[in-house]
Image (cartoon, helix red, strand yellow):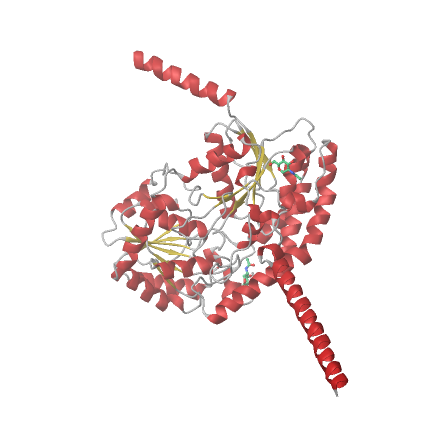
Length: 525
Ligand SMILES: *[C@@H]1O[C@H](CO)[C@@H](O)[C@H](O)[C@H]1NC(C)=O
Ligand SMILES: *[C@@H]1O[C@H](CO)[C@@H](O)[C@H](O)[C@H]1NC(C)=O
C-alpha cells in the first residue's frame, strides 16, 4: 500500500512538474516527402512528446490517432514533392537514362517545395492564427536556409536538424567552413585521406557550392523570404530582420551523426551529434512468421533491402532472376524485402513486402545486411553491429558505402545487370572473413558508449536552448569575424604597405645621398 502511494505521488509530481516547469510549444518542420526524412522527423517528434512537450508537426506523412499533445499539419496534398521524392527509377538508373543528381533540377525542386510548403493551406492556417505561439522551431536542413524564417514570426529560437555527417554547408551557418583537405563536402563521394586530385576536386566542389549558394540561389531565397515570411512577421507586430540576419541566427544544430559512423570532425559548441536517435530503443517483437524464420536459420540469415525509395518491383526481370538464382546457391537463409510477389523462389529465399528492419537486424541469427547504403540503414547496422555489403544507387549512399569499406565492416558492389556474380563474391568474403563482423561489433560498442541516449540528448539541448533564450553562449565567435580577418589579410596588407613605403623611402634617401656625393665630387674637381 505504501509503495502504491509513493508511486502515485511520484506520478503526480511528474505531471505537475511537466506542466509547471517545462512543457514547451515546439514547431517541427519536416516537409520532404521521402520516407527516410519522415522517419527522422517522427523521431524528433516522438522524443519531444515523451518529454511532455506540445508539438506542431508539418509533415507529408500524418498518422492516425496521434498523441494528444501532437498537432499534425498535413501537407500531403503537395503532389510535386511526393513525385520528386519517388522519382528514382532503379531501371532507368541502371540504364544510365536518369540523372538523379542534376543540380539545376534539384535546387529548383528544393525552392518549389519550400514555397508550396509555406503556401499550403494547413500551414497558412497555422501561420495566420494570431493566438499561435511557439517556444522554438526545429526544421530539417535541406540545401536551403529558408525555413529559418519561421523563427522571427514567433520571436523564438531556431534549431536545424542536419540529416547527415557534419559538412561545411551547415557549419558555415553556425561557425565556419571546414577545411576541404580532410573534410568531405555534402555531395562528396570519397572520404579522406585524399590524393592530390581528390583534394583539388574537393576544393572545386566546395568553391562551386559556395558560389552557387551565396551568389546564385541566395537571390531567390531572399525573394521568397520577403514575399512569404515578412508579411507574417509584420502582422505579428515583430521587428523584421533581414534574410541574412535570420539565416545566421541559428541557436543549435542537431546532427544525425556520430563519430562511430563518420570521422572525428572538429565541431562548434552549438553542434550536437545525436545520430541514431530515430531508432526506438523499445524494439517491437518480430511477427510470428519472421521470428520463426530467423530462429530456424541454422546457417544464419542474410537480410537484403534496397530501402524505401527504390522499388525492387521496378527491377528488370532478368536481373531479379539472376539474383534469385545466385541466392539459391548460398547455404544461408535469405530474406529479401520486396514489394511484389516473385515466382520460382529457391527454398532458402523468402520475400517480405514490409520488414521491421531494426527487429530483424537485432536478431542474433541475422549475420549480414545487403543494403543500398542509405544513412538510416547504415546507422541501424552499426547500432546492431552487423557487417554489410553495400550497393549504392544515388545521393549520399556512395559515401556511406565508401565509409563502410574504409572502416572495414563492409564491401561494395556496383549496381549493374551483371552484378549477381560480384554480389556472391562479396557476400562470401564478408561471411568467411571474421574481421568484418568484428569491426561492426567494435564500432557498435563505440556507438553505444555515450553518457546518455541520443534521444535524451536531443531533448536536453532543445530545452536548454529554450530555457536560455536562444543559447547565445554556445555561439561560435567565428561567425562574427570576416574572412579577411581570419586569414590576417589586413595585417598582410599593412606589412605590404610598410615594405613598399620603406623601399620607396630608402630609394629616395639613397638617390639624394648619391646625388649629393656626385655634386660634391663635381664641386671638388
Ligand atoms: C523506369 O525506367 C524504365 C526504363 O527507362 C521504364 O521503362 C519504366 O517505365 C520506368 N518506370 C517508371 C515507374 O517510371
Ligand atoms: C535571434 O534569435 C534570438 C533568440 O534565439 C532572438 O531573441 C533574436 O531576436 C533573433 N534576432 C534576429 C535578428 O532575428
